[in-house]
Amino acid sequence: MLEVSTRKGSDTRERLLAAAESAVLAKGFAATSIEEIIAAVGITKSGFFYHFKDKADLAKGLLLRYLDHDKAVLDDLFGRADELNDDPLHGFLVALKLFAEMMANLPEAHPGCLAASFCYQDQLFNREIHELNAEGMLEWRQRFRERLDAIAARYPARQPVDLEAMADMAATLVEGGLILGRVLKDATILPRQILLYRDLVRATFAPPG
Amino acid sequence: MLEVSTRKGSDTRERLLAAAESAVLAKGFAATSIEEIIAAVGITKSGFFYHFKDKADLAKGLLLRYLDHDKAVLDDLFGRADELNDDPLHGFLVALKLFAEMMANLPEAHPGCLAASFCYQDQLFNREIHELNAEGMLEWRQRFRERLDAIAARYPARQPVDLEAMADMAATLVEGGLILGRVLKDATILPRQILLYRDLVRATFAPPG
DNA sequence: CGATCAACTGCACCTATGGTACAGTTTCGC
DNA sequence: GCGAAACTGTACCATAGGTGCAGTTGATCG
Image (cartoon, rainbow over all chains, first blue to last red; front, side, top):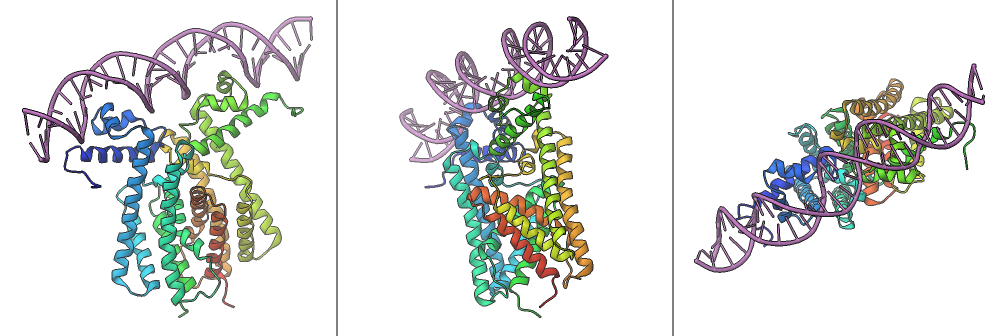
């Protein structure tokens, strides 16, 4: 009952969201006009307001879609890594390598994170959006924290480690790496940050030798 | 209350920039109206356009002011650290500790980076802004790279290291840490990321024992 | 004392955009 | 062929960004 989808209009909404997302990532939410979105999709203003109650409703739709996609990427990433390896540390290192490769092979020249975009315009949005955004970030923390806990259980760290910070570092490097990559127009920055993170994890937990 | 000796208008521009910056960090550039800026400062619209040719000129003024401030912070940071230590590695580790403390004691509850804000709205700005922003990022890379080169010269790394990525990691963690801190409303995230970075540097270069 | 210039104020005006309202039309499933 | 989803078309309003320009104030200087 969640997906409707048989009707032809079912993908109009998706196309509106896709057009809106790329515009928002390029100019911000406030500067993205409804007019340009409908022009890109080839629909009228009335059609837009059939799909979205108002602009705030569009923002919510954008974020939900983005978080769904985000979650799917993480699922795929760890799923593939787990198929290849049983050991938690090696599995995590494999996943990070896959992640770095994924980030290096992004089709888009100038990707961006909608959560970051919304965060820097947060006064435009209501509490619901803020909470959705926070939940998305906490999902990253939780996912990486689980892995690190499993690793730490088998490979005790030589030094005391702030595991929560190390879990957050993944999302931190992605957000920061996207920004540096955009500003410097260098798509290699993000994947190289991921690989450095991988080095940190290995140096922290891997037994010497 | 009144400032002495200089022309009274000389700080009107600064007050406009300060009001604009906090609004831009909260809502983005496009959503920041000139009306609200002049209302905050207590000036008329004509007065605003006396100081800034148009809104793009305001953007340039904001970024230049921000980058100046940014540079001063880095100068202060490394300057203080260098006074305390001669060894490049220990000096860098001290600087990172100072940096983490500085980030932990920020007066503002919800800080943000103007460069990041502009980056996520880059289609609003002209090439000059883009170039200024890139120069600012390259300054961070260069500053940290110099330190790492000096460290690597005295303490050869056990593993091959991507020194450029490690230099960029500082700015990356700051940008990402600010985002996570804002989204999760947790001011401890950024300083803890800096300390993890410090651990990475130490683990990479410090001789065992 | 009067000229000059920076630092404004006041006003008029045009346009774009978000958003509302609502009546009509097409397309599809049943 | 009935009803509902998925639209189109038109009209309209309030707000705000932005431009242009003429006028005013007040400190400073010769």
